[in-house]
Image 1 (cartoon, rainbow, N blue to C red):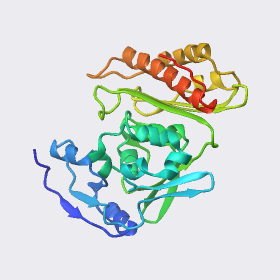
Image 2 (tube, one colour; image 1 turned 180 degrees about the horizontal axis):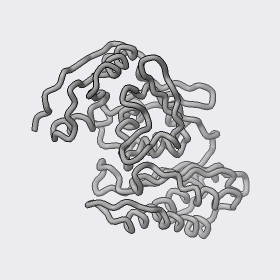
Image 3 (cartoon, rainbow, N blue to C red; image 1 turned 90 degrees about the vertical axis):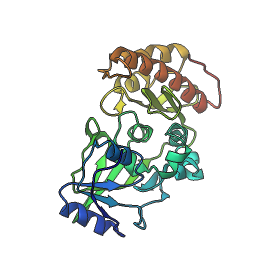
Image 4 (spheres, rainbow, N blue to C red; image 1 turned 180 degrees about the vertical axis):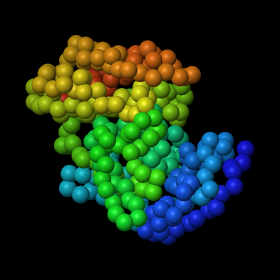
Length: 294
């Protein structure tokens, strides 16, 4: 199929791009195009204008700012995959990015594009939720920051206005030596996950868990922090029995269902994947002590 007719724009600055967004009533932004182009070809979206962000300088890059990693909105997923800084300071993202599509799609796909599309199964929004990321959006006249907890409004509905665009994401970092794991189940490697689990743990000497972050993706309309699991872990000593018991709380999530999986199956996957991720994250934080949870 072919896309519908539209007017193409190629601004060279963020200011020009947001000015176009303010002027055009029915416009779409083109970042990596890995979601937009198929949607155009299948006539799921019918914009009058397409605004290409690929020629804007200064909208991509990865930098460290104290205890935060700062990503430009047009940072390619491939650059995240091969960043030594990301691998060292945010290993959960490095592990998750290997599940995003295939090499060809990661060459083009962007962090900001994935956040703007906000597919509930997408890996980068789940990692962003787990890390308490802050999304910067800009419109004509100013910028504002949106905490990741407030970023999703509903199914594939980010909480920025039609005349705003994502220009950056700030990812707070956990201390070195923390435990991390990302587990997902997809019908084929490279497909969107039916369900995923992203886990971060701070573990004290002796195995006591002082802090936990648990996010499941693909179960609800947006990535979901499972606070009941986090609270059940904090202050406890990690063990197979604890992780097996606490992961069962994922079966209480109000899960969605579609042609790919019923709600009960997503709840089951959330429980199993979280149990596995907890074991892996705890092992990594406990200096390589093996804990196998099937």
